[in-house]
Image (tube, rainbow, N blue to C red; front, side):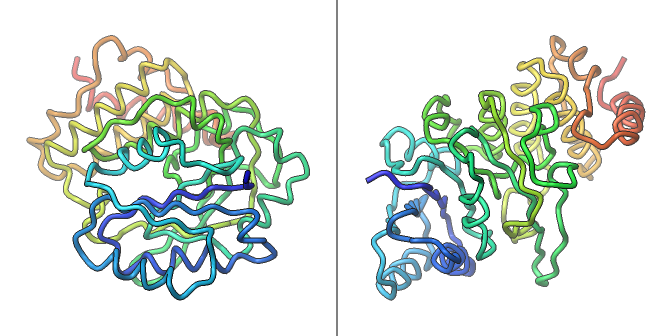
Length: 310
């Protein structure tokens, strides 16, 4: 039976967080869980109590919408590949929820109430960031004052994480496999979807919570050689698309990497391939509000001099 939405939850050693993520789906307002939702909990080889907690949670709920699958470890990209290559999707739309994040209880209701829902390839909403102390901060994903259809160049948001992004299953199945056993494949997934999408809708409300500083997550580990090399492989791959707005994202992320690499010796691994340098320099910050776009362009034109040695 075709459902409205499939949620993929990549899961690895998240015993402290997974119940909250599952509850945030189970407790959605004004949604027929059995008719509308499919949840694929894909355990990427957890070796803590994640499996026990999930199985206990599932046994306490009277629902057939949640499916738990355990596979061998291959990192985030392998989870997405597993779902895609085994054709597990039953929903018209797909969203990915990292297991330490969670939705607002009205999230799906807001997405489903878009009257022309099936016309859009990609739906993006704002969300809130939450830290280990429970403090939240709104995130301006796209600079718009209202929910509306938006042009693509405004959609190249710096927030490439999967939180609160809903995309057509047909689009998902068109994507190439992600790289396995490495981090940061969410960047590649989101921008691959964005490049392929023809019609995009933005919801201004905050529909979820993104945990910004979970211990041991890939976003908080030190910028060592291995992390930098994986990051820069992604950045060069995105530059190869030769899209000015996407190049602006890369510009911001490369500078972010440079600034946060405390060991200056490791900065030598921040390398833009020669064939992409002019693309890198010609970044177009169209996703920023008027007035900030040209300020960003000037600032980053100075900042990249530290990265691109003459």
